[in-house]
Image (cartoon, rainbow, N blue to C red; front, top):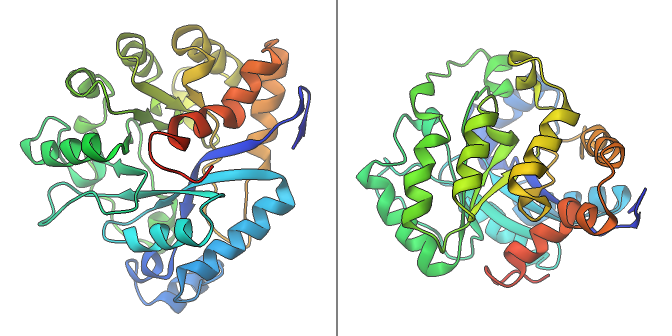
Length: 295
């Protein structure tokens, strides 16, 4: 993609893969799609993967991490990755409190949502997942901070989350115990910027994902320029991963998030090498060799 630093191979570290199973988890799929005004994907996740390939091609995005956004949907992203190994990484939400919770074969990362499923990352039931992630070279994505699921609001579904478990500080001891595991905190900690930066400063295996509109900034009177500057000052350009938080069709890839971040990075005077790292190079470096990705 053409940027102020020339041609850049853009990698998106945060795209939700809303499979047919995701819709079914919310109710009767066709009814759910109708209420939301979203396109309902077919039964075969490879078809949805093909749609994302076409969308990313149109936008000039080289690769992306796809997140299966309900527990038990690992197969959808694994199938997407298998169909397009040069384009996709497979992340999947796992609830460690569920019976038989495990790191499925073919995943590049597991996604933990402690506030959503109401547990501490220090819970003994999380330990087996971390051990498996370490053995298989998988990363661990940990959602911290404010958690709002817009689709649940639109459908009038309850969201009994518990923010007691959402502070990035909880991750400090865990990241220290597993120095070989790469941990990713999305949305700069989603309201816990200071705490996310503290953990990233103390743990070189903790990365920050820049995804979404970062609307949490209103809680602290921050702007994107300040957030990115502080993240780069503390974590460095090698541990910030661009993400869009794209999710459904017909909206597709959220170009505005990318454009806003590019504008701010340019205004900050970020070098071409650092911009290429943030916008895609770090994703390729983090997963290309460590997790057996095809790119």
